[in-house]
Image 1: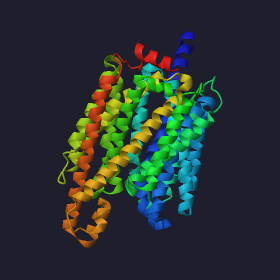
Image 2: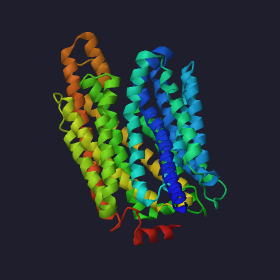
Image 3: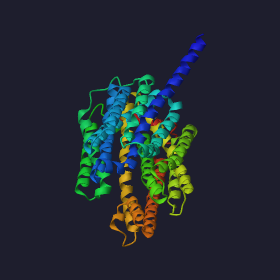
Length: 513
């Protein structure tokens, strides 16, 4: 009887852990969907709400700025008040904001709802990550991270798929309404299956650190996301970037003197943390670049609608899942120092292959290099996150995870801004002289203009110019991935196993604290 009781308790514990992962998966899935669903809805919002270009920009930015700016304090608050409690608060905020966005009667109300949605996402993302090492031990954590990462990536193409389907059949508010049942199920599962965890020795909230991090990251991210539209020399862009750098430098200085800081500066003395986070950031940058250019290529060059575009990005998600599972299995025998650079090399190969795309290339070729890219993302990202999370003491997993996710988010935003500027410049310079000025704005505008006027020469020229710009962006991403592979292989400590710990890294982290 005792044997059966022990077996039952073990199976119940095992089942509970994977149900908890299901709750975390749903939590990040809705964030991934919301990051891309607006891409297909902006024209509808412009028509139905009378939104100007500036309004549309703020509908997007109102989510991104608080999402990036609030992650650091969110992680620290989770350590102090309870990670599950703060995760549930984030889900509640996201759900309430989705209701407000669904029934918004003007751009101002929609922008406010998007800002609240971003604040909810800022709680969900780092706290979901910080719960993984609490629920899963070293033997299962890699697999859990692979599923978690795949869910986040799956949400990105699901956004246009779901959004396109809903917009074809219902009003624009339905793209936000669909969040609510997902959030409700995630919240119930989190409340039932995720154990509460916190740092029992957590000090009072680090108010100076919180203020500096929020204002610094908000200013920096604002400058970054405004740069492609306004230009890198615009006064507002430069002011935002300068203010962000100054405030974040002050944050590092202040946090270095605090006994239990919100931003654990000591983490950056660990080579495993630094190069694991750097590798994960390079992967995020590359994936952001792909998701920036590929949907435009599928729509404007290959002629697919929003729904078809979302479906055709799925090979990258499938590759990511396979690469993540392979990375989880290979890291134990080979070590993080081997597997993570190998993933970055596969990622670079996918980018280089993609950079050979021409106007005449069919979707089959695009699907092939998207799958290679996805495999590289999974092979590099899963071991990187596993290694970094293994370094974090359980009581500080919230602030440590928030630091990792903030670095990734800012790196991804910088990547999209920089690559967007490169694409715009390459596209504009590739157009022949004499094309209508409106065609310079974007490939989407040029294609719409060419179709409306029946100008086949403009259509061909715009598509060729865009593909040339896309190839340049992919080549730059490939070079960055290859450089990251070399740096990680050189600077990661030797014999870094799946736990992410070595005698050297453990000493560094202990000394840092």
